[in-house]
Image: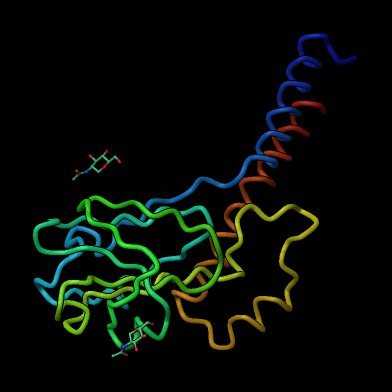
Length: 183
Ligand SMILES: *[C@@H]1O[C@H](CO)[C@@H](O)[C@H](O)[C@H]1NC(C)=O
Ligand SMILES: *[C@@H]1O[C@H](CO)[C@@H](O)[C@H](O)[C@H]1NC(C)=O
């Protein structure tokens, strides 16, 4: 027979499990350029920096720089390609700017100080649809989805899938814990 104490523990674990399923995944904070920050010094390869990250909706992009020398402009794709700073979507100038990503797709940023974008101080934050946060068990990607999204898997392209599967693993582990407590 199951003791009252065990029943209470099982109920508590069950609700912890439900809460874990419902809670949105933790947002990550990505500091652009990592320790180098947002700069023209040292020819930081921001394209390479972004390629090693798996951005998700809700993540925070942090631009850290000296506001005396740089700024952050969010621009359209055309403006990004042309380093055209005449009509930015948004301009940030604090030197410690946090931008929360609220949608999938590309988010283009560059430094609006003349010459800096041309020198490579520009970054494209691309939020892939496949990396949508906290998939519910019923909407887990089917095996055919990764194949169509990742035609030639490379480490950076495979990362969203790895992350999704590690989250799934955590949830499965919780299921096992709950079942273990009940049995
Ligand atoms: C820069 O962008 C603005 C607004 O998008 C546009 O009107 C202008 O023609 C562009 N200038 C150049 C040099 O491309
Ligand atoms: C940037 O701002 C955050 C709070 O938004 C603060 O915790 C952090 O210390 C600031 N960093 C710098 C370098 O000012």
